[in-house]
Length: 157
Image (cartoon, rainbow, N blue to C red; front, side):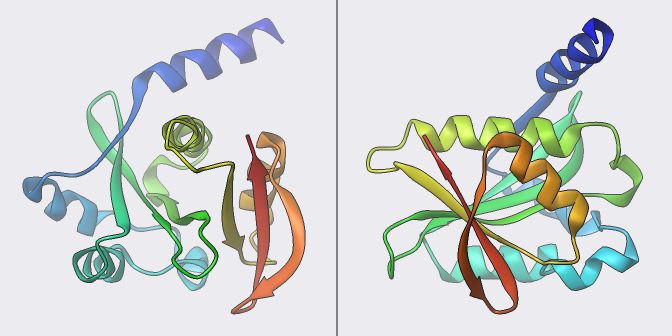
């Protein structure tokens, strides 16, 4: 058990999450989930476009030891006033290494420091069991709502 905890701490220390620079866009656009996961999430190109059109969206590049491995995006929803994690994806080549879990921890840490952010909300495809388990392990709970076919989950600080 101690080895697992130590490995998780090492992965978390190696993973960074930050807003991308313009020169990061090419790397972000090259990141793709497994083909079967493509139905669960918008493409990174669509997400970057959305961020360009909506100033509330905050895109994030996920890197491990300096190498881009994933993409995330959050925003404060003007309809409900909550912060939502709109995207969280790890490239297929880098899945199963703990990067998604580490990135989620970093994102929640960042959001916890924002004023007026008592909770974080996200939607997850019902068939995306792997993602649901990760979110549940962090303390996300089902709200009972379904939006666009996605189960809505909430994390309270």
